[in-house]
Amino acid sequence: MNGRSLLAALLAHDADALAALHADPAQAEKLRDAFVSLTQPRAESPSSHALAKQLYWLTGTDACDDAHYTLLAPLYATSLAHAVHTQVQEDRFGEANKAARQARRERKMHDGVFHDYPGLAVQNMGGTKPQNISQLNSERRGMNYLLS
Image: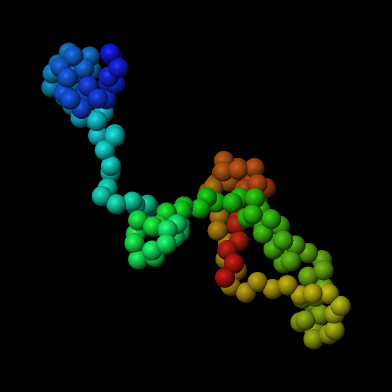
């Protein structure tokens, strides 16, 4: 109103702005506090969830100065996970690798390449409904390979 935002009026404890929120002054004050708190920083320093993958990338010249870093939070690349899954599936269960594995077991020569993934782990995403995450995740039945 008159070039002044509702937020600016609430920050200044404007009586008209408070009255617009609620007829009861105590309730209006609670609403004002809740509204204003949305604009306040939640922590003194940048933070992330403890289990989130994050990387601090040097953007300035002084590696000793925290202000010269930017926090990156990489997103999960489902298309990359799908390509890796497809390759690993073929390497583990394809006919060519079955023949190579059989030759290795029998200690015989083989013209092909034997693929092995020691320490391979599987991460299942989506629980009982992997189709709720993405189309590619649904095609993998929620299975993602974690290479050692």
